[in-house]
Length: 86
Image (tube, rainbow, N blue to C red; front, side, top):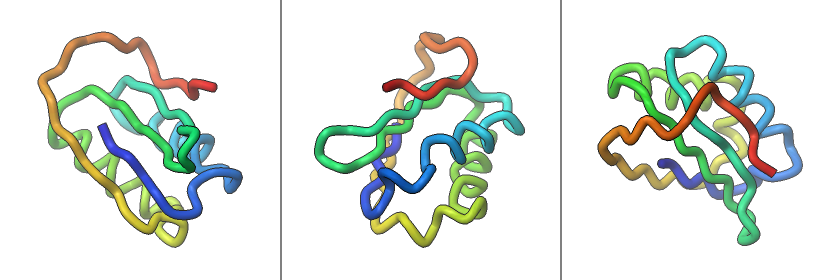
C-alpha cells in the first residue's frame, strides 16, 4: 500500500496510474482519500511492484508528489485487475 500526498487530487493522478498499471502484472485499486491523499493498493511480485512504483513517478507524476508512504504486506489475492475506486 502506498499513500501519496502533495497535489495528487484533481490532476489526473488516478487515471495516469491506471494507465501505467496496464504495462505491469499487478492487480489493485487506487482512490482519493478525504484528507487529500491518494491510496494505492497493489499486489504482485515485489520486483514488479517496485518497477510499477518507479514508473508512476516517471509518468509525469513526480512533480505532484510531496511524499509517499510505502507499506509492504503479504499478498492476499483480493484484487482482480486494476481499477479506480470512487
